Length: 101
Image (tube, rainbow, N blue to C red):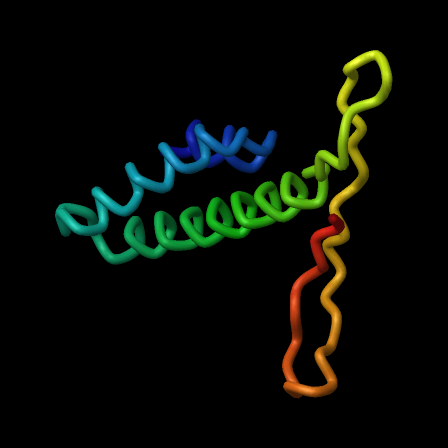
């Protein structure tokens, strides 16, 4: 148990590995075969993995580029996705970045 815990603390997992580990934790907790202390440790690990996965998704979302056309040689022209939230004053809500056309 301590080996896995130290591995999780040592280096962040990639998204797929984090989801796999999170699934293992959820399964173990749903089975109910672990004691209270171990269940609490697994829960804390799960929260850390969930937070890490969410951060990875946010970083990936920021890297997405919009295809705005092609140049004369047929190469794609991409521009960064505007991921800043904008306030829609007329509707009083927050709207995600606009797509450029």
